[in-house]
Image (cartoon, rainbow, N blue to C red):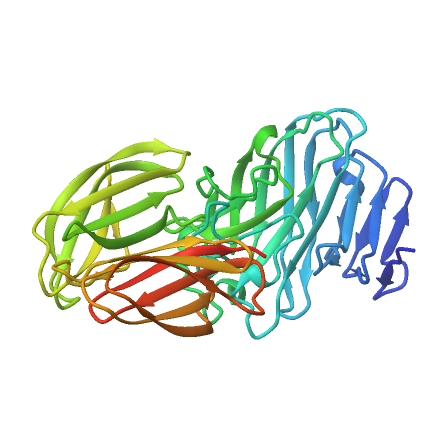
Length: 417
């Protein structure tokens, strides 16, 4: 049975009614052990604050304020409070166009106070499957505030149109491990049916003085359950979700994938031998605006015999640009080629074409870059396919690096049992 823990800090300062809650002069409602409070009124005064008001401590996805809003409209404010940081963090939903009668919204919010608080992938809401994209890509938690908000309106036949306003804590964007610019914060939602954050540019107006992101438009189609705040220069997902290079026909071939694009004018491909001085070697047009997965490729027809570093600079229509991390492609002379494929049943397949026999070392890393296992095998001259079986490894996405005498390839593979 659910239980509610209520701490009343002064006599008569907290009153609970079937039709609402009156909070006067600093009472606390502390929810614990999957507790919930039901506010059985559609009125925006279902939580009323007098004097110095009151505070609600949720700090768990399942510690819920259940508000039976039905087809009412107004501004519904949750006076959330974070005990660890002794901070008030109110959250509000302004409903302009009512949803269908009989609907309710379950509200909660929480952060993570552990040593890895910056890594949101360790404490995602139950409907969230990734902190990048359904398609894959690196964990983008470093660009995401260390808090989630739950607004579950799934009991509605027709959801309302609303505007959200968030309050955040400095310690949750500036924690070690995060690389957020506070003035870039915006709100993002997780699309539960599509299992991604894609195609939703961070919304709202940030105030670094007030620690708020306000005016977040939420039409009925975007009224999803799980929300967070991210740096809008690197939103969820990171637009460039894949970038790799390989040797094909003695030329360096670069391939990259975007999950979504906003005002993307063009890509500039740059090359370097020392990771310091980069030279432009080509351009490709971008798609402008897209919410679909797009694949690009570029062939370096003048590949360097000694190998080279490559990076991509993406430029918007207004001239703003950002640059990818650099990758290395080894000599494309006679070094051969390496490709990696999912083999199923906890295995992957190596397809290697080598001008001379030799040892190849395979190293497996998880998505956090942690070393999982390593194996070296001998490959005969010419083309061969080899199945590599992995022992005692969970079904997940992994980075697999295969390195020979003259070349090296890293590829992201989903390993399935």
